[in-house]
Length: 256
Image (cartoon, rainbow, N blue to C red; front, side, top):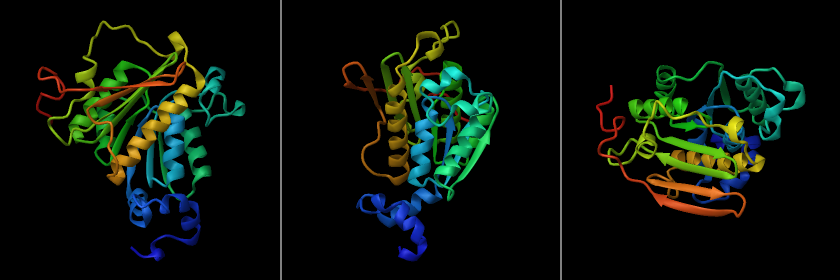
């Protein structure tokens, strides 16, 4: 790859990536051609999207139908006090373009469901679940399976955070529902119910961005088949192995 494929400005912008032999010019070019769908523009979606944008990921689609309120500002670092009442997806889009005008960002201010997410995931390299409810997480998992798009899932409640990567390109890999079987009677749980330590969403969102970049660049060892948990009170990480559930109704069923 020749230097001419990156402008002088891009060579400067991404210079710290270019110094890494695992990325270099070829990897940065791959990032520029890649695309991601981020489901949720809140506490996890903010840092995830901002690190992907600053890293030069070429196309980012943000799906969220919510608007910004004062209670979001404790942790949703892409928003400011004068953004109250604005749509999260479109406001985050403006933040990302101000951060890096070289990329393309699409804001989809609609409720995420499996049909919409499947349409969007079909053209994406990675699908990133930054939502805060099980219904959306299950729908995102279904879209990942239907399109065979790697899924990076994160969650943060209280002081506890988790992140894992589910890659359906290998049929022996577990999916999200192998970890959390769907239960129609399970009560909804989010930071609205139990609160969340503000920096925790930054930690988990940054990990989700790192996992997405590793998937696109095909470097390192993604968290496929592993669940990383962290307690922010002690900063103690735990790594658990995940196995495919042979009775899972999601990933053992034929995909359309």
